[in-house]
Image 1 (cartoon, one colour):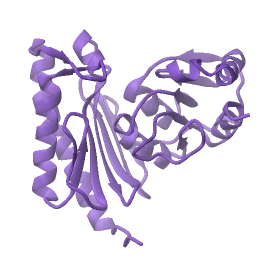
Image 2 (cartoon, rainbow, N blue to C red):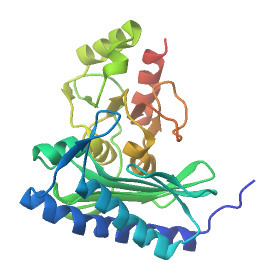
Image 3 (cartoon, helix red, strand yellow):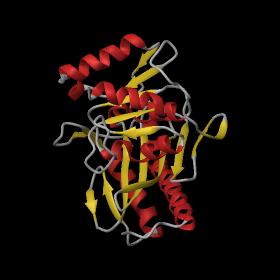
Image 4 (cartoon, rainbow, N blue to C red):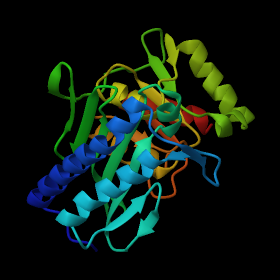
Length: 268
């Protein structure tokens, strides 16, 4: 069994993650603002730019300087090294938004210890906010209003006051039972939106929406967001109710009461 990480280590790692996010922003911002990049299509049919690759390299330089023995699992370069401490990195989560010219993209950096996500930074400087959290230390957001602690809403029921946001639902739509369960939620709540990517998890953590559903993603899309939502008092699993891990492909994140109700509906 792995020894627990002490508070001093967690604080040092979180500080390094913030520095790494800053380094990524320094790479991404000039290319974004000047529209200075070419676009390639990866084998999974998703786009990649020079900014993705350069930002991942910048993040790793910062983290390697602080923690030379840690492993890395990056969106562009895959798994490097091994061990119980692995940094999960998506340099530009939302590359399609980046390419098409709207600021709904972010840098996602998280640390996993022995299979458990322990801290994360979700930085979206062009959108104007950054969220972060460490296990047991609470979740925080910095935006134009300043810095504040995050807390999910106390929403208890799917009614006219509840709000849901969704990401990609292709796999969910292919399941007649789950699509019907989703349609039932749509009929019952007051608002349906598709904020997507980092944004709906930030909104959930600060109490602005109540449930996020996604059926097609990977761990690098959500790793720090899992810690942020949990530290804000929410529940974050996959659509089957399993804990989030390296092979996660779906997300169900919500206030505690709505998570329990949605999980039951999707797995009736």
